[in-house]
Figure: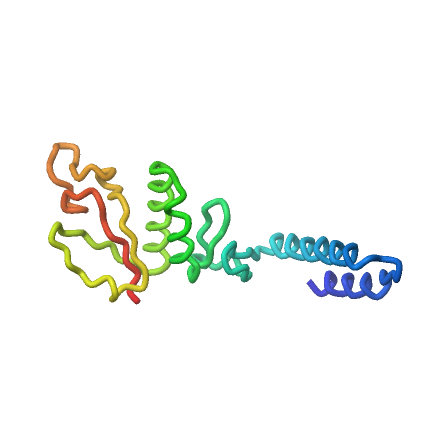
Length: 162
C-alpha cells in the first residue's frame, strides 16, 4: 500500500505538465483512483455500493453480496429501493438469501406470524416479511398439514431487534 502511495506522489510530482488541461488532469486522477480501488480489492477490501465506504471482506457479516455488495448499515434503505424493482421470482430468491444472512451474522429473529398479529413494528430496527422456506410459501407441508414454521400463512417475519 505504501508503494502505491509513493508511486502516486512521485507521478504527481513529475507529471505536472502546464500544457495539460484540467479535464485531462481530472481524467488522470480518476484513472489513478480506480487503480487504487482495484488494488484494495486485491487486498480483500470491498466498497459498499450504497454508502461507498470500504470494508474488509474477510470480516464475516460485514457485507451482503448479491452480485454487488451492501454493508449492514445500508441494508434497510437498500432493501426498500431494490425490493420493489425485482420480479416476484428474483425477489423471493434475494429475500431468502438476505434473511439467511441476517439470521447468521446479525442475530435476526424469525417470528411466526399470526392472522391476528398486532405486534408493534416500532420495536424493531429492521424487519421484512419473507416466504417460508420450509413450505415454499404454500403454508402446507408434504402431507397437506399446516406448516408449523409459518403457522400456515406461507410467510414469516425476519426481525432485527432495534
